[in-house]
Image (cartoon, rainbow, N blue to C red; front, side):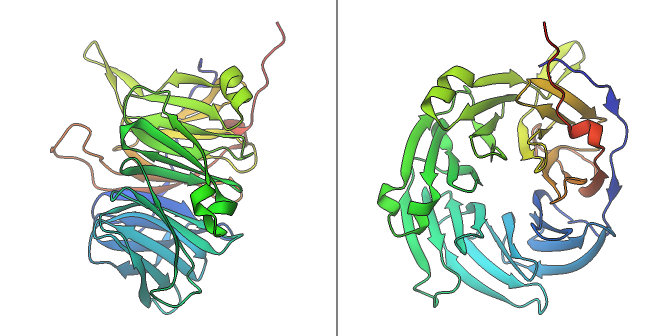
Length: 342
């Protein structure tokens, strides 16, 4: 993909009272401008993105690896201790929804079904019904071929990326509808040669993007015919440093809800916005102070939350303080640009 727009210098405005340790996830509410952040500081942080002020903080017993919204009043978080906790944002009370036997890497709430899906390093995928009594709320357990490294849900399909470069595609309706044993539609090997670092389902639900630790993104399709004819991969998040080409992991991929274009964030501290349909890079930000560990577009697509947080790509070393930026998104940065006729 060739660049078509100059780098933008604007990084956004930092939130007040950011997490004090590595930020693993930022995610917007589907219905408001509330923003959740999971962190290695063992706290779940809730912000009002429109004011950049903190709204609440919820404590956990271990570093958190992921979080998600059920609604503005109810949120979930999970991490290294294997506990999945459900929090009431109004009363700040919490309850343990369930557990895995190892760290929980990924969460996905399915609003149409009222079910939470969790993927763990214990090589399992579980479905939970928060409305059911404790002890009876785990509605499905699916064994996986490796540790979960990433997970993304569309309206009909769930994509789970595990160790060993496995990509598993599930029918959500069967997974949460009592037919979990028949839910697996496809079991693929990643088309990228190196370990999967991020995955995101397309806005239109036709496929998914997967990013690797080796600075590449693959664009894949669920339909077998589309997969063979239209899939492709491209290089990104690379820098020339001291005359050498240094490659960084693609930590985060997030799709714009309105246009279906998408952003990638890397260990180089840069965000690139892409038009996957026309195979173009639309824009690129200036470098953030640290790695772009996680990103998320707001419901309107007018804001982008960016977690600038060192992800230890180069081992233990001094690094800038963790921060969350709220970046105003310009329409020209995310609007697709059709190819010119030959």
